[in-house]
Image (cartoon, rainbow, N blue to C red; front, side, top):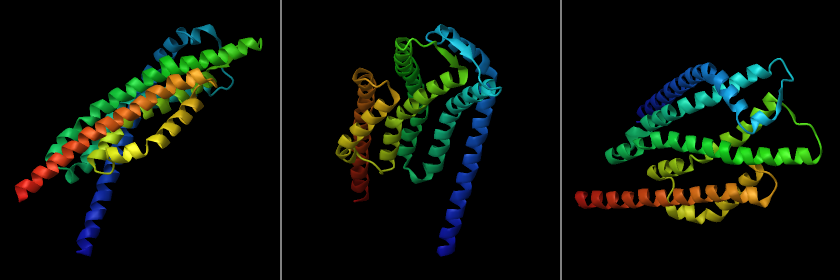
Length: 250
């Protein structure tokens, strides 16, 4: 029995390694696609507010290369995300019931949709709000706004990428509930700590004023409550399935 269990563990680790290799390959392919579209995307973002209101500079020969690589990585992340979710589902599929397999597969496209929504919210709301605040402070000090392109886009990515990942919270919660690692009761007990953490995150990525923090914190708290609601739906279905299974088994 010990040898069988050992072989089973080795087989699982081998399968996981293969799936991680495929995920890495898809990420690389996505980055190559990102390199192709990086230049028109950078040119477009430079031509719209607030970027078109500032004077651009590079402070290192590597700055342009860094821009290409940053945009390539983000594009690769967007392309690899649904594939990664599918590989995770495929790896966990043998341990799920048939109904759970079909239901959890629906998480894959929704993960991409939520990531894109988080990306849009981060760019059009939080990033622009933060940039306008810092620009106003600069003008109040009567300083000339001369930005390096690397600093500008690094500032942007440091805001929008964490928010995009936070928007994956409902999918993560539903998936963990499916695996019976979370339930709505546990999430409700964690509510006050979750609220505190979300407010701290909102304060860190927004300008230092209460209005900006509230504008970001409220959607994040709503997102958490939506996750609790979805977890409750999944949990009630699990209870009904368990009850039905026990009835059929007598």
